[in-house]
Image 1 (tube, helix red, strand yellow):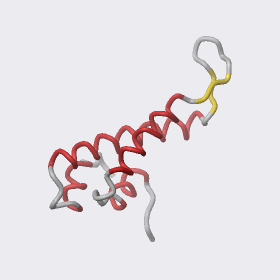
Image 2: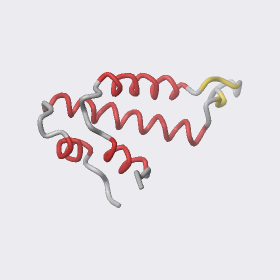
Image 3: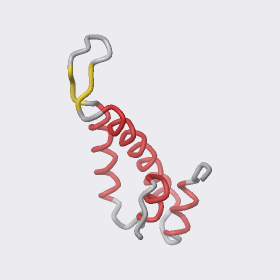
Image 4: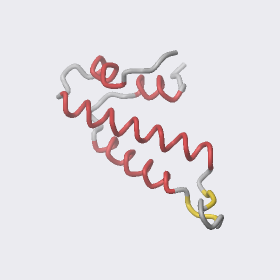
Length: 91
């Protein structure tokens, strides 16, 4: 599957939502997904790049902040789009 246009897909599922709400949600979802992939790849605890000491993965905080923003926007329907970008399906 090629690149997914998250804004277009969210707009299909939310025809009454304002363009700015869809864009804000789409951006939060993109950032959340990137952070999620980093945590999946490197774990919740990773090594500091300079010292090599174990630290909490800073992408955890990014993921949490974006997730909180999306949760505040519960009026945006996103299950289908999240499934598209994460590979999860509601079978």
